[in-house]
Length: 97
Image 1 (cartoon, rainbow, N blue to C red):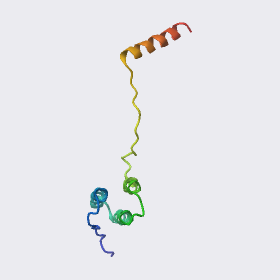
Image 2: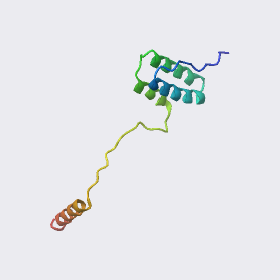
Image 3: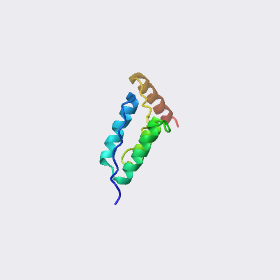
Image 4: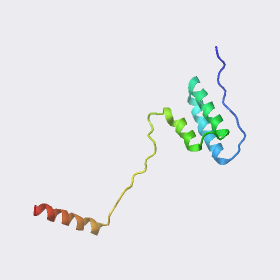
């Protein structure tokens, strides 16, 4: 039987790495053996600067199906006067078609 996979420990180098390590730690505690090995590999690559932080977070979230990637959609609004003016124009066009 193989040895259990241990959580990696690094000294706090900077804030970004500390935040990434806390995300790694949270996922590591909930993961099974093969996922833990993948997490260790990803964190080691991040520490040796082989991958970027966005790539690290993308790799961590890769197997979570319930979450969608962040997508920012634009919400456009209008003032009440402009909305009413536009509605009158649309109604006028519909009436005369």
